[in-house]
Image (cartoon, rainbow, N blue to C red; front, side, top):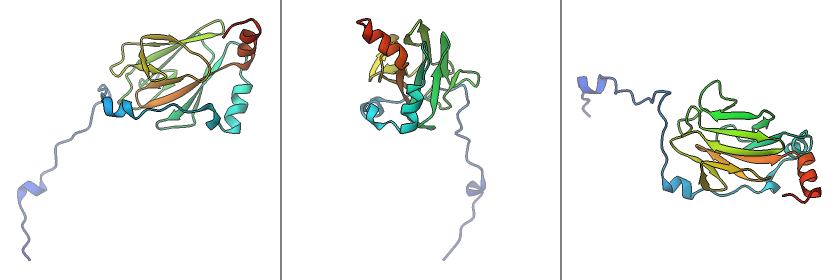
Length: 164
């Protein structure tokens, strides 16, 4: 057996790290793999958290992506999701823009708005600029998928008043 030592094999490979200011774009093949998560997939703890939501609030439960199972309380008029470390909902992945989407509250109603992200914001698989959120809607921000749950107090009031 002969061993060959060349200076080329000893040279370090060029770095292929992405800077934190780069947002990766994923293609149609990835998007075609999406499927919705049924609310029946909730744990008892998640159901308790949803049941305990006060009026004027909502909960996002991360169903897919790093940190699956994480919960984000929406209890402000505007909550921003993004890759920026100061985002209200910090999603640390290159498929997420620094300021990707905002969740907006008006009374007991919530909407999501895309903030000019590279990969877009999706609700139930459809790309949206701005969309009203209903209980059980799936919101996709980059590779993260979050399910929206409204306060049960507000949901009961809407149903009693003929809404939703």
